[in-house]
Length: 195
Image (cartoon, rainbow, N blue to C red; front, side, top):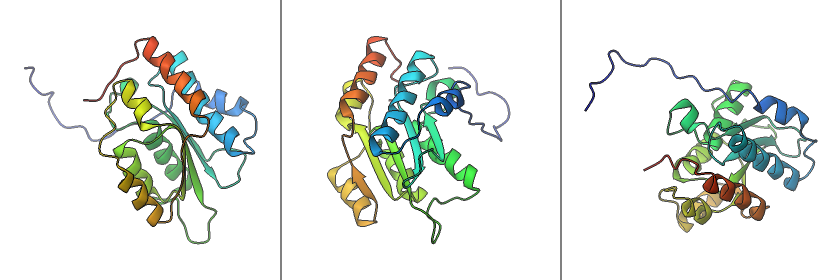
């Protein structure tokens, strides 16, 4: 076993791959839930094509807004950090953009998370605490597990808990499109990095 490196880390830097702004800026205005989900799926697809991470993308929109407040792609392998799932990255960047630890300010427009795959246990908890008022997902937990990812303890009760906290849920929007991207990741021998 190798010795630990000297000293302790005192900073963490999170940055999206350089291709992301170009893709988001060129994407048409998102005037429907399907368009917003297509952006999340496109981000996942581009992440694979650029070799910058896993087959997962996310976007946070103010309800009804045509442009995202923030987006995220899976950055786990590229930044060597197990928590940098697409949803976590999008939430971090959204809160940084607003200069707030919450996306649920009194009187503010509600924010919604569109994600190419149903959130794992970590991302589900982070979404609850973020202040997001709606989660819309494409592919499901079983699709991620079919690739070999351990999605953690997410149960029907987990979803009911979120609903009881006032978070609206929609599952399976454009699921076939998201599954196709995930299959491409698997067929390209994409890294299964948890566990």
